[in-house]
Length: 296
Image 1: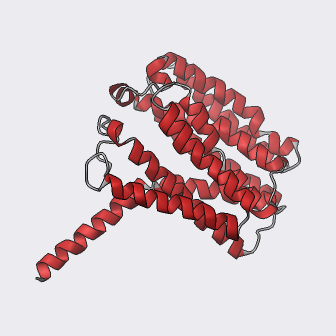
Image 2: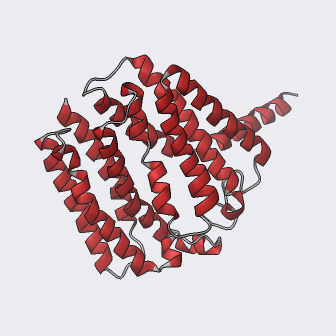
Image 3: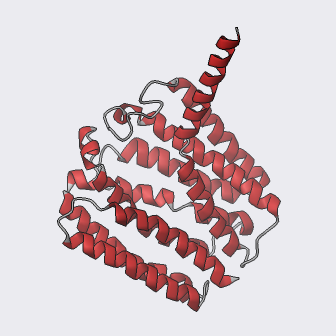
């Protein structure tokens, strides 16, 4: 009897772990960090009352988790064909697809309604745009049809700072759009570097990402061009007097390192360079962190 109960407990923990993994907690975490930057600048460098931050984080986190689960639910067929994703719970058949769909909708829709009520309607609308962009436009419509999917997916992924800004201001000011622009451009070399790493997986699943549709060298060129474009875009907080000279110096140094890595990769014979991908994450965290520090 006790042995059977122990097995049930282990099984329950396994299922919970699978659901958590399907919600992509790493993406949820980065989303909340980006939203916090928007909250900070929307409130003119002062952190608002913790209950507003808490409600914004709770509702945005749940909506993001639900969106990621919807993405996993829709992509479960191609995930089975890709080595990187074949062990995901849905692709492996470890959890029920119908139950995952129900849970993902229960996470997404009520959290957006709650956000409109306890935060403000504009924040819920902006978050909804991100959800529809990621799940509807990127995942369901463009990902399997065009190599331009990442560009549109990047727009949806750049919404979190605007969510944070709208949460404390109930509007979308210049700072929100600048943070949005930084993330839109940043996501391109970030995503393309990862796509190069798994291009054979994408080809096997017939997903026409740029490395598959256009080739390795064309992708390396795009990484370089987007990194070049990021240099002036990253300076915009200083140009619009959102941050000061410390941020400007950090932006120049970080962008120079990023550009150096992109140039080195472009000129090399390597088919992929995960150092570019890894540094892109460090770049964004440091850029936003120093932006906040410099405005204190």
